[in-house]
Length: 387
Image 1 (cartoon, rainbow, N blue to C red):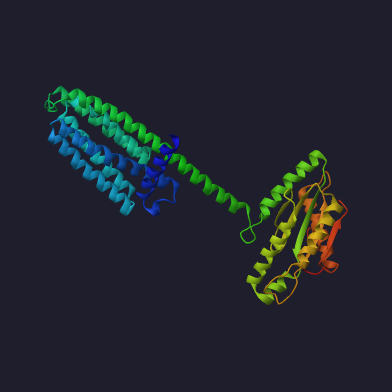
Image 2: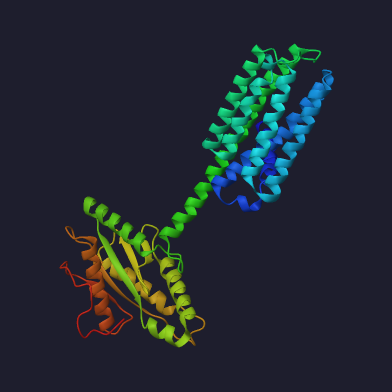
């Protein structure tokens, strides 16, 4: 039983989405208001003509004509929404059509005693759902003024006697249908809001992914990989487990850009990222540290173990074949430093950077391990070759 109901609701939601112009579907706040307006229009297109035929059955053709006239206003509001996307215009046209219809029915069916007076609550409800609290408050004041005016008119005996042939039936149907319509509206409203929240969560996930990943390589960006490194260092210090950091740098990367162009350089960065990322463990963290530099956080690895692992990675990179470089092999230099208690992450990185410079100075395409825990300078010593 639950599945057919869910299928019917999905079918209804597809109709509701189809009533909203594509231009309004991308912004969650605008989209949900447009969908709420579409729901109200669809309910109005169903309920209002039904009441028209009901009044005909109760021998009140004038009230029936009012319903059919208001049906035209609701249909026009739906067209305005779908064709122009003007939510405010469609909302005011819809609320105005329903409000004028209810005033006419209240006048014809007994004033304060009219079963239609409770339906005035629909106007601020739909106005709030489709326009926000400010519009809802405006319509609330308008409805309260209409109720006060109805009461004053009733005191002055301004309303004619109802002409329907079964007033009790009209009261029963009006109350029951009002309760049912509000329940249906709230059910659909809740589902639409849940769907809008789900779409918003998806959008936030995408935004978060963009915020922490490097656009070119898809790896974690510098800020995020440093955040993870800091987090892993705190954990390593707290539990007394080893942790090592490694900085990779592509050898002669500038000459690749100068010879084959920046597009080829970007391709090298992407393939390099894929190659190294394919070698690291799931427990480790790998990200882009700078232009042609990458940072690897090796969890649970001491300095020598990290160096041996990084050496295997270096060999994999050297064996990698890249198209578009006329057969040239791309290599990396790497510097490794093991975490020491009492250091900051910046100090560990400085030692890894110092070992990287040693690897560059010793001829590139090699891995160097920084064995001292002394803080190393963050810039190359005078006379060392550029990276």
